[in-house]
Image (spheres, rainbow, N blue to C red):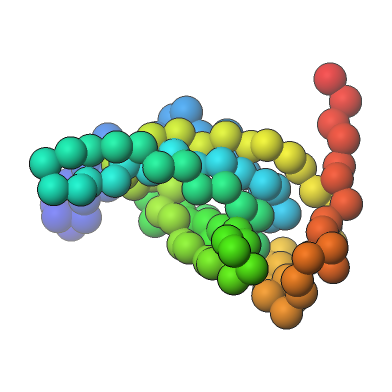
Length: 119
């Protein structure tokens, strides 16, 4: 039992508190630390959240972007130390918990209707 308690204490220290409320269908911009040889730089990755997996420190999101006509999907661990910031650019109105049907759509068919929030 002591090992489980120790693991939970370490997980609590690693969890980030400055993460915005991300939902499926949002357009997000994620800044990632990239190590190239001796240099470290920040690379932005912008796309639509297709899926979200909530499981404590192992929470992840699947983000899809289209680059030069090719769809690219990446899975990001939200609490990873390689992620610097997550910024929500746009909210969308959806009725599904996973948006895997967007994989078959290209161009204007892949658009989602925007949800406007009241301030």
